[in-house]
Length: 332
Ligand code: SF4
Ligand code: SF4
Image (cartoon, rainbow, N blue to C red; front, side, top):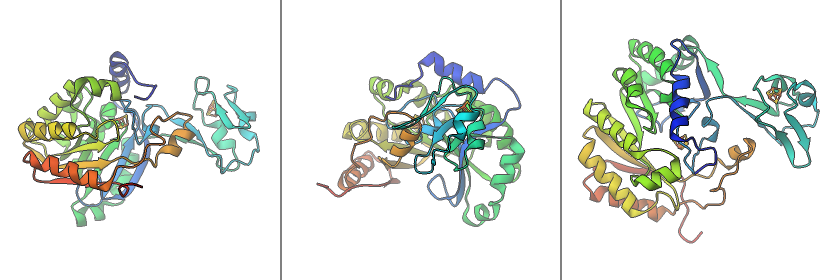
């Protein structure tokens, strides 16, 4: 599990922090247009900051913290040192190894970003109010209408910003936009309760069903996740269940079989089951965030193994099982 894992109490506090006030801005780290992976049709995916879990394999480490993150791009830096001059906290040092950012001292004021003539520093995570984000996502409305697409909120974990969702989702529904939420499911049910009436589809992660392994590898409580999955399905909301296939963590037959059986028995609204192969493209994101990633040298999954996992899932009675993502040919 990533070292910054939140304990259960801390995660509750982290969620409450974001869900305390009524009218809040969303903190968003990416808006991806023309996505075809995050629900039906052509979609805009909004990536929101903050996650209650700390999966060892997390592909979006820039989504973990609820605060903006300062990153430095070595290839752009021209050593102008303007950033060091403007930083009142003395949080920056340019050494032979690169830019050292003291993240304890850094207040995310953004002054260094403005001062850098080369665009080598960036604050990842921007505030949007509801109207600003609506303007942004409604620009592609014609694509949603033509393709039966819509808007997906992912992250991080979008449910940690439930106040913002509670404000924007009804407005999207007024305009008949299809709304999907991509969730790890590890937040209290009371958060789902507040927005569920405005959601057309949940992309729901079931990574591991073994209680101990789930806690060890993600920091979370699998009982909470499976209870939420059952509740969503009992409310008749369509679901696409997804499992990341991570070498040494989730890639065993028993895990895929037990998740598939859980879906067959408990989630009547599951429309498909997606197996997502491990992707190591996020290595450079960890480096820019100054984080060590224990999976940085792990090879991709073999294509034949993904095929096998698909067959195992189908063998439990699931009919719409797919896999996607990068793979390697056996022996590479
Ligand atoms: S749930 Fe997703 S965003 Fe959160 S740590 Fe796991 S992989 Fe990363
Ligand atoms: S964001 Fe502000 S506090 Fe942080 S390193 Fe830059 S100037 Fe210093």
